[in-house]
Structures are given as structure tokens and as C-alpha cells.
Image 1 (cartoon, rainbow, N blue to C red):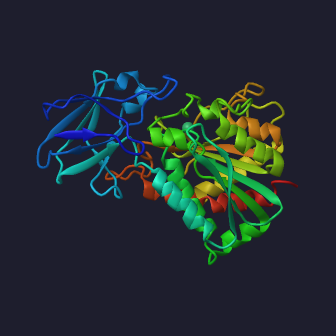
Image 2: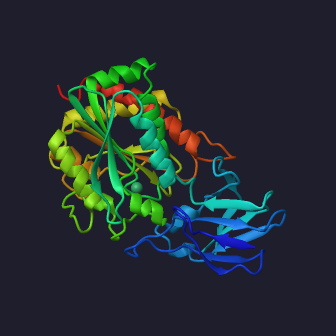
Image 3: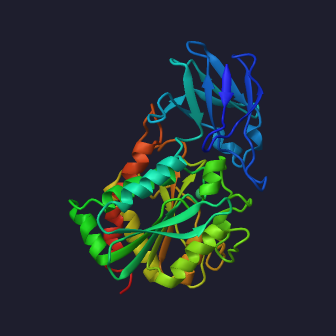
Length: 373
Ligand code: ZN
């Protein structure tokens, strides 16, 4: 049996693979040492053999509670990802699988590779009316690309994958962009006349390639850097925030995944100083329209709301809502599945994240006329 993780977003250390019924593995920590949960590896040579893999340091992960009711994903072709029996026992994540084929890939969630990211940028730039700008570079030397779509007066910002292990965020972006760029879609064309979309599909390419859960190459959690980003620690945020300061911002959606909750939900900026009734009304309209557009989205379960004046201003949503007095929100998708609309074979999946991204044009359309009134 062979286990390897020397590829894009790979993350695993083999402790002992001599016994297929007790393969012992460990997740590597992110740079910065304060986070780990993402894993992604390939196993070969166990066709037709029942294998039990134990990730023995799962209890040391960033969100150990998240392993309850969690099922790992697997794929033979790296396109279709399905769930495999997984339990959390005595601090170890135990994955059981009898492979039908020679090679199997396992991961925390369906990966979104750097090659696929480059394909996404390339595919978008050949569509009508799209500009691609490199707004900055990461510490590993990756470009931070911003796509500009549409020519309306409003400035709508959408960013994803500040937390690189939340790969569903870039799947969401793929679905959102496909629909926004569809010139046969009347809603997309209307939005492109009303607004200029500024889209950053991957805020943290270094962490994505390195197989991190939350941090960049310097060990920074980018969604705690928005108050005072620096070139040394968080050039990705510095570049995008500077760009926002130049263009202005009338709407911001920051796309994430949540390890624990089996729901799609939005978290707002209610805790900022001077949160307005206008912001509250816009957010409510956005949420109702998103529920109507896609039943995988819901508003009943989510994070608690911050007390007024207690918002963490290092987070994108709070910083941008305050800085530009606009509607800014964080969208969270599950690593597990949606409790109300489950899919036992795949759980939450790339396909469903793509669909939720495409549906987002509806809630944007519901608020766009009132973003600046
Ligand atoms: Zn996140």
C-alpha cells in the first residue's frame, strides 16, 4: 500500500501504513502552527481490500467537535466525490473504505486545485466584457487575480477562499461566474448593466496549494487582517483592500465554509458601530430572496449576532460594512451536508456549491436597486 500527498493541496503524514486494518495518519499543521483540519491524500494498492485509516491527531484539530457526524470524501476520477463511512473515536478520525480501483483520493472536502483556478480565470477572460487584473502577489509569488464584469455605477465585491481549506467557496465562485457571464441570461445581463462586479475567486492561493485549513504562507489568518493588513504578513488582503478603497464598495460578499454547522447561512455585520436600519433591511431582503432562489440556503441556523459595538473589525465583513457603510456579509457553506436537504451519497458537494453560487444572482437582484438610495 502507498499513501502520498505530494501534490496541490495535499496534506497528510504517514505514521504507519504496514497494516491495512490500522493505517495511522496525521494531519500537518498550517504555517503559523495554530490551525489544522484539512487533509487530502492518495492511497494506492488496496483494491478490493477493506482499509481502516485513523487520523490519530484529529483531536488536536482547529474544530474537533466538527468531526462528529462528519463523513470524509473520496474519488476515483477526481471529478466525482462521494462520502465514505467515517467515525470519530477516542480522538481519532476513522475512515473505512474498500476501494473498487487501484487509486483512491481522500479529502476533507472536494479540492479545488490551482490548475482548476487558472482554468477558471482563463475561461472567464475569453467571455465578453471581462477584464482580469493582477492586484497583488502572495508571499509564495502567486498572483491575486481580480475579475471585473459589467459596467454599471455600483461596485459589487465578491471574494472567496480567504480560508484556503474551504474549497467549497471556490466551487461556489465557479457557479456564480458561469451564470454572471452567460449572455443568454437576462438576469445576468441586467445586473451587469446596473453594477460593476469585482470578483476575487481565491484570496489565499498559497494556503490552497500548501494544503492549509485557514492560514497563508506567513501563518496569517487572512480574515483577521482587514483592520491593518501588511505587505509582510497579509499582502493578499492589503492588495484587495487598497483596490476597494480605489473603486469604492456598495456590496461585499465574502464566501466561506463552516466546519461544524450542517447549513448554508449568512453572517452579517450587526456588531459594528453605527449599524444602520438600511443595512439591516438590505440584509433581510437579501436573505429572503436567497431562500426563495435555492432551498439549500436557510436563515434559521447560523452564528449568533454580535452586540452593537462589539464587532471584530479585523474581519472582512465588519471592516467593509463599516468602512464603506454598505451591505457586507459572510456566506458559510457546510463541510458536512445540509440537515434539511440532505444528499447521503455526496453530502454538500461541488455540484451543489456551484448551484448555490449560480442562485446568488437572485438575492443580489433583490437588493441592487436599494444599495445606494
Ligand atoms: Zn472561513
